[in-house]
Length: 118
Image (cartoon, rainbow, N blue to C red; front, side, top):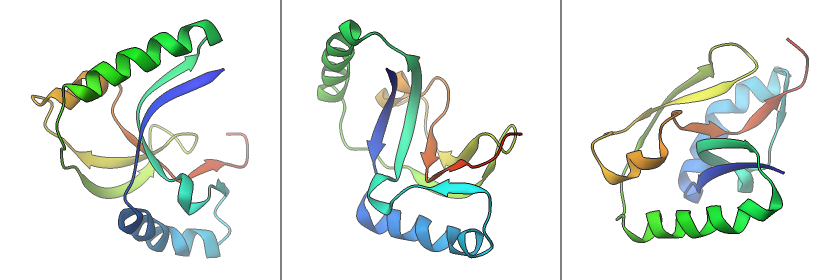
C-alpha cells in the first residue's frame, strides 16, 4: 500500500486553505479536490510499503511523536512544484527542531490531485 507520514490540520487552517483555493475551484482548475476534512500536511511520502512493515512504521512514528512537543508552522503561498503534477505549499519550518526528523523531503499540504496527465 502507498503510505505517507502526515499531520492533520486544525479546522480553522483547513477552512483558510479552502477559501484560498476557491477561485481555482470555480475556474475548474484541473484538480480533483479532496474534502475539507482530508486536508493534511504530508511530512514524508513513503511510497509502496508492504503490510508487514506498517506496524513497524506505526511504532517508530509513535516513538518520534512521544519525544516531540507541540510546534508551530506557517502556511504560506501555494503552487505546483516542480511541475503541475506536484502541488506543494510553502511551509516555514526550523530544521533544528525535533520535528525535522521527518521533514527530509519537505512537507506538502494536500488539498487536491491533478485530473489530467502532464
